Image 1 (cartoon, rainbow, N blue to C red):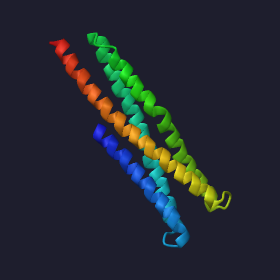
Image 2 (image 1 turned 120 degrees about the vertical axis):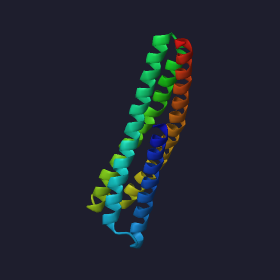
Image 3 (image 1 turned 90 degrees about the vertical axis):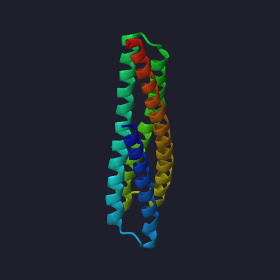
Length: 161
């Protein structure tokens, strides 16, 4: 599951980057607005989906680790580690999701000339940086959480024997 989530997170970031590049190309006339809008909606959906799944997976693995620690009286540091992982990614991932959704919604405002294009461009750049950082943290802590889960499982089995 960890590999699937990492793939989803990378794919969502690459799609966001592609939509940004499309948006920049709109001024040259090489891209039609319809294509940009459809891709933006797809990128937003995939991004929110990937981040949400990652958050729920980290919670689920943390709960399984906590239950294993409590059941076999393992070291409490494992619970603290999973809480640290969760705390490390939840805030930035939530901000990344909100930024992506805001960027998509306000993009409609740019299309209807309610907001200036420069605002959408600036917010797009900021959204890409935040999304890149969120993806980096998710990959880092998904791998760490996965390895911790295997370590706790091995220790659980040793205590079970």
